[in-house]
Every structure is written in C-alpha cells, then in structure tokens.
Length: 194
Image 1: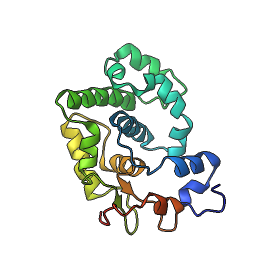
Image 2: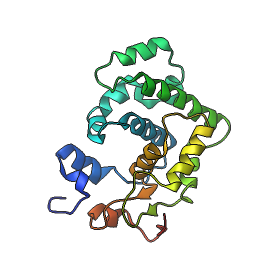
Image 3: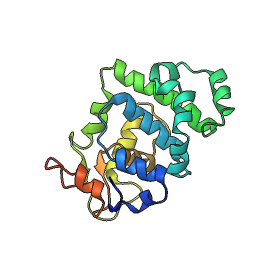
C-alpha cells in the first residue's frame, strides 16, 4: 500500500507516472540490454514528456522487436519506413536512425569485450550516487558519460538525455529528499557524492 506516501512531485500527476515512479524509476538496473533499452527510450523522450514515452512503451517494444540489439542492428531503410508509419511510437526519423546506430554501437562494445552495464556503472564506481541539492538537467558526470558514448559510436546521447537515463537506471538517486523511494533505494553502500 503506497497511498499517503510522499513522492517526487512529478510522480503525482496520474496513475501511470505514480506506478512507474514507485516500481521502476531509480531502481539500479544492471542488465546491459535493459540499460540500452532505457537509453533508447530516453533518446526518444528528447523534446517530449516522459509520460508520452511511457504511454507508448509497449508500442516501442513491439516495433523494435523487444529491443533486441541483434535484430535492431540489422534494420534497413525498409524498417525505417515501417517505423515511420507506426502510430504506436514517436515517428522521428532522426531518433529511429539513432536507435539503429546505437544498436550497432552496443554490439560493437560487446564484440570488443566491453560490457555495457560495466561501462555504465563504471561512471559511479559500481554504486548509485545519492544526489544532494537541486537536480539540474545535466551534470559534469553526464557530460563525461555522453562523450564516452559518442566515442563508441552512439548518437542522440547528449548530456541531458544521459542524465535522465542515469536517473532512470538508478546510477544517480535524485528522488526528492522527502520521497519514500529515496529512503527505500538509499542503502548504506551509497556514495554521498555527485
């Protein structure tokens, strides 16, 4: 029972956002494929609300073959056209093409024996950072991660997108100080720096 609990202000708008906040947002994700999926979805969010993406997440998963990077990496112009006609997703050519490039970059990392989860968690020394103070749209840490992703061939991974991804995946705990999830997700192993 989570009624009456204090949440981050953005999570109080409706049931979809509340459920996402209470169950997923900020939970440390250590699965490489799921981290990649979340990075793709945060890229699609650029210029839009997260609620818009969340409401279409099932459509994205269907359209992008369950976010299987092996399959997405093989997409061609016919697949781009199919996706541009799919009303169940955000139909942006730039974001669709970035997803295909990012699947290829993800696989290139894997083929070079660089685990995507290990790469991501390396920015926070393997443990979530407990954010203190106002939450900015990006940070020096997300700038560093953004540059590292771009060096590996990723696109649509600017520092603001990457900061949102780091929050969503629990790399950085930015739950509001009074939010019940901040306390729940804050263990003794958390670094108190960012």
